[in-house]
Image (cartoon, rainbow, N blue to C red; front, side, top):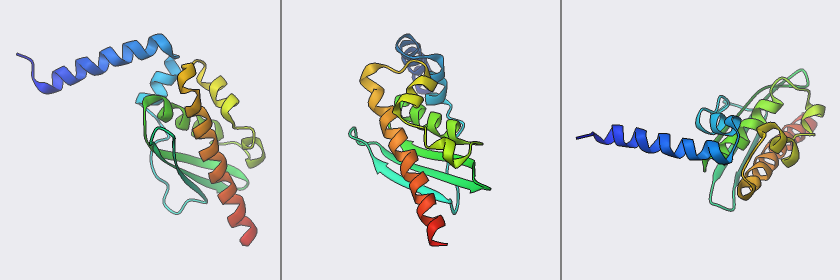
Length: 144
């Protein structure tokens, strides 16, 4: 008889296999192993939000010399939301602030290669969250 952890692992494998059929490998990788997941203490830019599906999201930016040094996020949502937030953070890290203004729904969808149409709103949610964190950074900078 299989133990509970073995059953859970088998169920995860089935779900991931189905996800690979409807989305790109990049979506599955970003959604299950997001390398930008986490918190930045004392971020230069910060945003939080809630999605229509009830996701709780936060984006953290660390900026040095006009470039995004680090971008991190935390998200309580589906694999597609996590993938989209990870894509936004990955696209921003190492880029100049001015270049990051182009991170939007369309650029995230292009970066992810294949996101199911019924989850395209996840890319919009991630883009809005990222842009809100960027605006927070710019507002703080103006006050200095």
